[in-house]
Image (cartoon, rainbow, N blue to C red; front, side):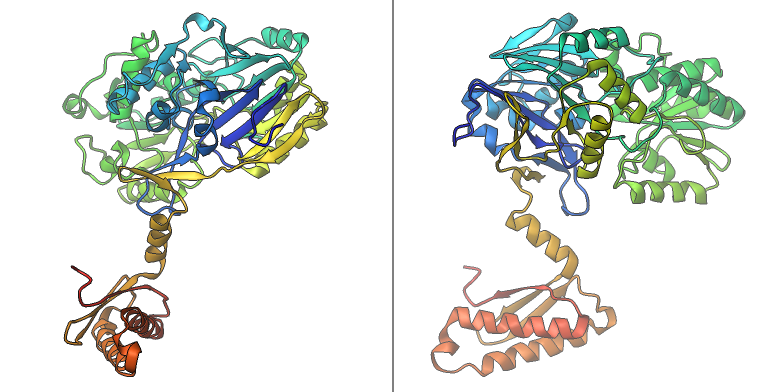
Length: 550
């Protein structure tokens, strides 16, 4: 491979996001000087990025080679696969490819961003094959927790890649018709060079379970709470679960009420694309609250503890939907790692109010959209790939899937991470090089490096606080500490710090006493020592000298 990483007569794979982490999926395939991108996702921020909501993969590698990029193919409409589209697609300047449901959601994102006329969106109808440079691409329906989840079969001059996207096996998927076992075996018979595969649930010894089983569990759970108001919280994007809840409402004699803008949007898009045709008519909040308690089933967003979502507002009694002691909340979703504290906060509020809660640990009211070990082993046997490339997981997930694949007869497995260029063919597959990868954050209206000065400083401020020292034009010293755990000692701390700074500046002589930089540094160190002495913290210290404001 050339030094500039242009793919020659070979097949390359490069993840810029989603390998070594769950979320933010961005994958690249390279062949004959051209690149293909699969998915353009993002993830939601955690506590490590104060003030940040969205996190993206750093696309610098492919942005520098955008003239060699053929297009972006989207496997499905979850945010960790399409969420970055409004922020980067216009700059990349290539068409997006998606099936109708996914395309509709993407189009709405582009409209909200004012980009609908700047980004070409190609809707792939009826799963017809299409070609992008040296890549011939086919969509293959697989079950997942959203409508139109797809794998990609990517045919190249060096062999075929089966890129699973997010998937599971489901004999009763409720929505959609997944590719059958026989069809997958036929693909394996024709030959698969590489399986690039979801690793999320590799440690789960059981199959993920069927949406049909969820229907039966939800039906039984709702039916037993006769006379109680029941609320179900689930992922808004799970169209099959919405279909299930509509059927449960009808079967148990309840009217359906929906609370949450994202649910409204998904229902609208689903129905526009032929899904949820049998969903019963919903009632508004006032009508729902006027019905006898046992005659309404509420579906609400917020199962991950989001503070502005419907469930949080209902729990805090700040929403038109009201729950009382004895009413029931069913958590028909799994806890996403990192959300445990937020979910626990909502559940504690509900518990304090005497509201009954049921989770998937108590009843099979949720199943995962990702494959457990039996499903992975089944897919290995049907496709019989030469090479396994685990993706969509933390390093522990991907390493375990590599071991599982080799134990099930796959000759070779490559464990890679974001930034690793892997040659799949010709020759023995393996890592060739490592290129820049990383994270960007949406900070207000600006996309900035996740390790940039602003985010690093904000993290330090959150951890240690800040002290501001103002040196007046006539030598007066003014100190303010923010975020220090001093409380009733604060006034004494300020007084002592002002004295320390004044004394330190008073000791400077000659040229030092006239050097602004020396004066500022002396004041900073004196204030920092005082703050550490009083609080045990090492805060940031900012010194404002005469004339700084001008």
